[in-house]
Length: 164
Image (cartoon, rainbow, N blue to C red; front, top):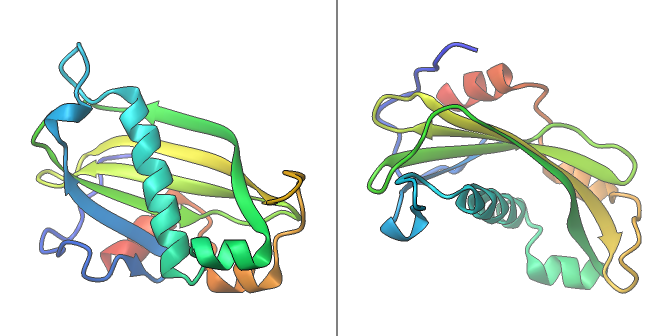
């Protein structure tokens, strides 16, 4: 995919859930940098988990709701494609969206962009499995959860929605 231009007047998390595409804007801290002088790979995973949890909470599925439901989500797999390095002080925009649902799981997609030139730095996908909090065994994704999220088919659609 070619580099994507986003709306440069985007405010910091004023409307982080824009029709299914949840976003966060932040600055890379010095503590995220590895020996190679760029963001450590583990930081990307941390940011992905944090935005997934924030998106869930924004749609009414916070820790208390999961406790009430006796459920949780666990990661089956992560896939990250690193396109360009990021460095301390870089202003970044991280987007996430739900890519669909199966009976007991859901893929979540992520796109990390450099805010000043809007170039993609990384794209990622996590396969989340819905589980019983007591047993850890997979269970069906509740209809109430499915109804809380807009499914977005692909990255281009997510960018089109986010830029409107």
